[in-house]
Length: 162
Image (cartoon, rainbow, N blue to C red; front, side, top):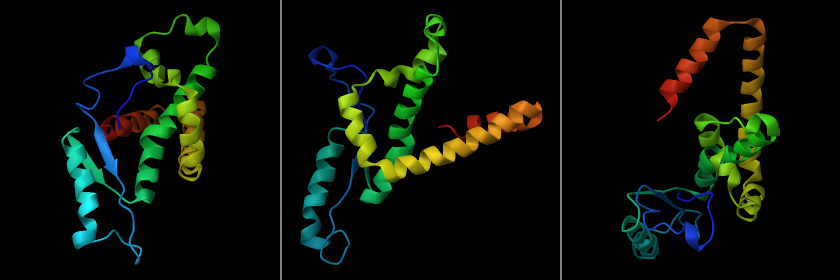
């Protein structure tokens, strides 16, 4: 999990993987489980390789990988693009750090993200459905002027974030 919205040779970063996380998804053997013993040696080789490059390596099933990356990578990219497209050109001229930080990834190369979105559309759709439900709830809270509920929502988000 490393990258940038920038592209091309000028965007090369020798420190790209300094704070990165690598997901390794093992293949399955004849019984539907990752191979053990001698057969598991290739997995250990891949994990050892990534441990030399990244400070964090997580071994996950392909399904768990898809669920997690939908939430922490694919969904934020879609939302950043939606935020930018939901803002008028006039307003964009006044965008400051908060908006620019939040939407930086919307500048990413679409040719990279289209196959990712389509390849993980099942998990991504589930995340979008949950988000849509959350937005509807917040919309009702705002319309009713429920400051206490809004405060609890914001406090929970603040505590939940890393």
